[in-house]
Length: 411
Image (cartoon, rainbow, N blue to C red; front, side, top):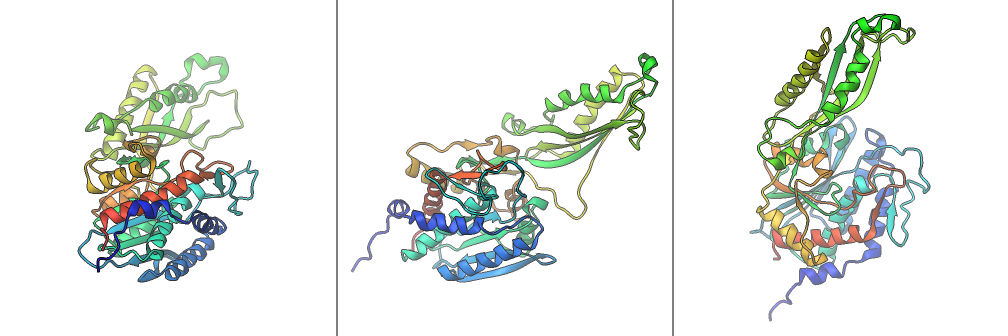
C-alpha cells in the first residue's frame, strides 16, 4: 500500500491561524527586556513549549551569568540537509506614546501588537509554528531542524555566538529578523566611532580670530552623512555603507565646560556609527573618515581632528553577512514565497534591513553556515504601538513550512 503523498502547499494553506496567533501572543505577554530576568523566564517557557509539541531535544544553553538560550532539535530520519532557525527573545524597553498595552498581545482585524512583536517575536513564533504544524500533521523530514531562541542580540549577539561556540551547526540557516518577508542576502557590519575636534577659543567679540569647533562640527556632519567607503567590492556592497552621527557635545575644553557661552567653543566630541559590507574593513572605514577630517582641517587652519573606534568591552561586534543569490536556501525561500504570494520575492541587499546588524553575521562568519535573513515585521518596528501585520505573520509560517519541506526533504 502506497503512503499518501504530502503536499507542502496544502499543509501551508491549512495552518491553524488562531493557534498560531495565540502562540505569538503568549510570547508577547512575557516581558523579556534585554539583560533582565524576564529573558530567562521566556527561554524556560520556550523549552516547555518545544517539549510539548514533541521535539526530540529541548534545553537551556548557558550564555553568561544567569542568561540562557532556548534550544530545540527535531531529528530527521536521515539523508536530508539540516536547517537552523535563529531569532532573539530579548527586546527593547517600552517608550512613550503607546496607546495599547505593550504586553497584552492585542489582536485586531489587521495587526498583532506588543513590545518586541516585530523585533522579533513574530519571527520566533513563525518558525516554531511551522515546525509544530508539520509535527501535528504527522510529517517527518529527512534532515534535522534546529530551533534557536537566543538572548543578547542587543549586546552584539552574545547568545548566538554562544550557540555557535557550543558547536551548533546546520547546512543552512534562516535568521528571522524583521525584513517584511523580503529575502535579505547581504547586510552590513557595524562599528562605533568617536571624533574629536579641537579649535581655538576667543571671546565672541573676537570670534573672527577663533577656530569654532561647533561650527566645524556643523560643517562636518553632512559630509559624514553622505559617505560611502572606498573599498566596496561592488555597488551592491556600497549600497549598505552608511555613516551616522548620533551624539554631539561641544563647549570649552575637553571637560566641556558649559558655564561660559560667550566663549567660542574650542572642543567638540562626536559619537556615531558606521556600516560597511562584506569584504570591507573597519580600518579602511576609519581611514576614509580621517581623510574627510583632513579635508576639513585644510579648510579651517588651526583645527585639529581625530577619529577612533570605540567598542564596548566584553561585547562582540556583529559581522557583515552575505549569501549568493543562487544558494539553495535562497532559491528555496524564493520558491516558497512565490507559491504563497503568487509574486517573486524581493531579494538582495535590501535597505533598511541591509543596514541592520543581525545574528546572521555570527552564523555566517563564526559558524561558517550559508543562510538568509527573512522574517515578518519591519514597517512598524521599534516604535510606539509596535505591531506586525497578521497576513505577514501567517504567510511567514507558510513560507517557513514549505522551505523546511524543500531543504530538509520529506521522509
